[in-house]
Length: 117
Image 1 (cartoon, rainbow, N blue to C red):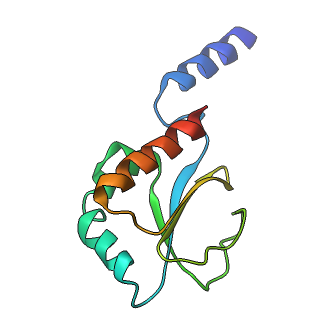
Image 2 (tube, rainbow, N blue to C red; image 1 turned 90 degrees about the vertical axis):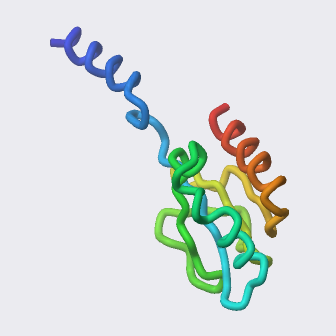
């Protein structure tokens, strides 16, 4: 029986998304935020279709709203948009502001790589 359990655990580890930590990208925004609107125009339509979007699905939060239960961050954001990468409910990285499409993707990729280490 123990061999069957160990074999099953080994197989599950090979299936993408199984036995891995929960990762998501929080986007803190507020009404009237011009940079949020820019992000919405330049990144939002393609985000869920990218590898980054599949690894870290986006969750939008209002800047002044309380944090969802089970989420812990270093400090509450001041600027919008602020993107906070969460792994197992804990902050692992942050982008304050929207630096434009050319910089957003590399910054996000770096945060995701650091999360995997």
